[in-house]
Length: 89
Image 1 (spheres, rainbow, N blue to C red):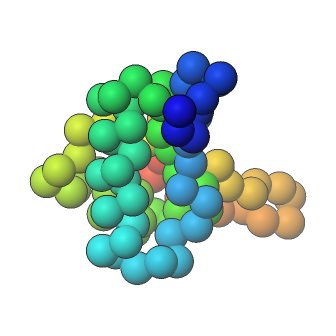
Image 2: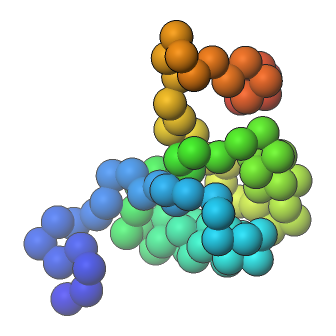
């Protein structure tokens, strides 16, 4: 039964947007970490996170798993240099 019935597991689960506020972002990340611990999800990550969102998550006391991906838009018209430097370090 459950969400992944017939699938076995979810390969990657992302938080699509950081706009829900700090408390909800961290509650969601905690639930995603639990899903990894239970073997329901293999990898967790984020999408559309800015530098301060990444720093908030990496500095969180309850962080067990770092995000494996931050899916963002990068193009010649959208160069997010500060964020690129942050996530490459």
